[in-house]
Amino acid sequence: MATKEKELVNVQDQKSWEESFEKETWIAPLVDIVETDDNFVLIAYMPGVSKDNAQVKLEDNNIVIMGRLDVYNQLKDARFIVKEQEFGNYYRKFYLSENIDETKIEAEMKDGMLTVVLPKHERIKPKTIEIK
Image (cartoon, rainbow, N blue to C red; front, side):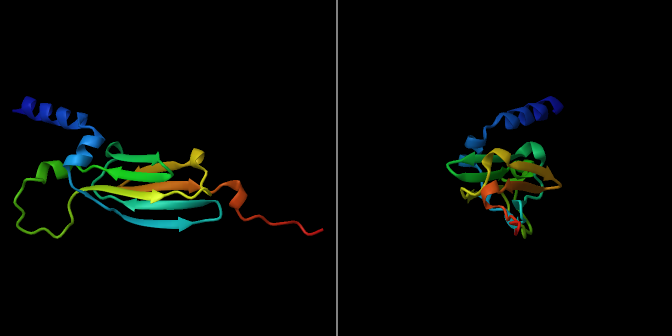
């Protein structure tokens, strides 16, 4: 039995993101976006998603965040007695302004919270002009 379970896990791990996007349920994670002098910071709340199951992509002037839940695949066919939580993998897309320096974007996943730092281009950062 342990061998069969291990095989199922391996098959699941090989499933492509595109394939899962077509076949599984996806919901929008809650997101906060904060602005500092140097950056915009996007914080996406994706409980249950590990770093290995999170993805951040740039495509067509958009930033796409995705997170896959292992538990979703285990429970998707279960009969719920009480279901208060919206259930599914996470997906959200945001348009990126030309004011973002795409070459310096950084992302970190910790405790189900994805933090994406979107650095501002130097041309739009506040500057103090010296008065002579």
